Image (tube, rainbow, N blue to C red; front, top):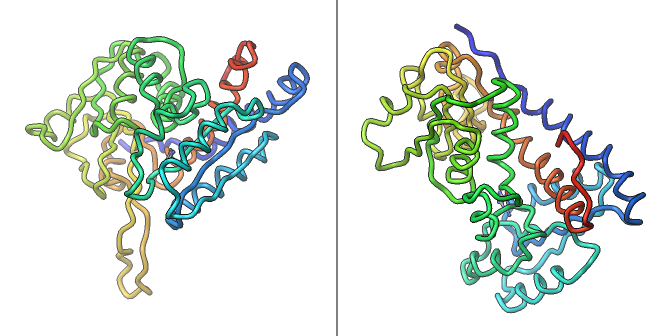
Length: 299
Ligand code: GUN
C-alpha cells in the first residue's frame, strides 16, 4: 500500500480563508475586528520566526495583530502586569505568550494569569479542565488541528483505536482528550511504555508527538492506519556528495511508514501549518464568545 499524503498546508489555507471570510460579519455586528496580541520575551531565533508568522497570518485574515517584544531580562512581575493590562483591554480577544520563556520566569504562573476566555493557546488550567470535563472552551491549536485532519480523512472516528505517543500538556494530553470525546479508544504511550512498537501496532489512528527524529518505523504501524506526525526535528541532510546542511523530519520514518499506512501527514506540510490556522480560528471563536455571539459554523 502507498499511503495517501494528507495535505495539511492546503487544509490550513482553506481554514484561514474561512476565518477571514467570517471577519466582516463580526465587524458588522460589533463595530470592531477580532484582535490577537502576541507577547515574546527575549531573542530566541525560532520563536521570533514563529511570532512573525503568527502576526502576518493574523493580518492576512483581516484581524488586528499586535506584538509586544520584551527584552530577555524582563521581570516576571512586569510580564504579569502586561498580561493583566491585556486581560482588561476590550480590543484584545486573544492573548498568546510565546514559549519558551526565559528561565527566571515561571511559565505556568504567566499562562494562568491570562483570562481563560482570551487564552487562544488553550494552555490555561481552566481550559484544560473544560476539555477534560467535555465543556466548551479554547483547545490547544496543534491537537485541534490534528483532529480536524483526522476527521477530514476518516469522517466519524467513533470506535477506532487511537494511540497517542507523548504526554505533554500542549499536545499529547489534549489530543487524547479530543479523541476520547470523539469516542475513540485511546492509549497514551510515552518513554516508559513497555513494548511501544506492539502498542503502536494496535492503532487505527497513530499520533506521534515525541520529538525524536524518524523514531516510528514501518513495522510499528498497522496496515491501513492513519498516521499523524506532530514532530519537527532538524537533522543533518544525508545527500551523499551534497553540500551538507540540514533538513526537517518528523517523528515518523516517512518513507518506510508510507508503504504501510493508509494515510500520513508529511513533515513539513502536514500538522505544522495547521497550528497557526487553528490559532486564527481560536481567536475568532474567542472574539464571538466574548461578544455574546455564536461562533460561525464550519470552523
Ligand atoms: N512555542 C512553540 N509553539 C508554541 C505555541 O503553540 N504557543 C506558544 N504560546 N508558544 C509556543
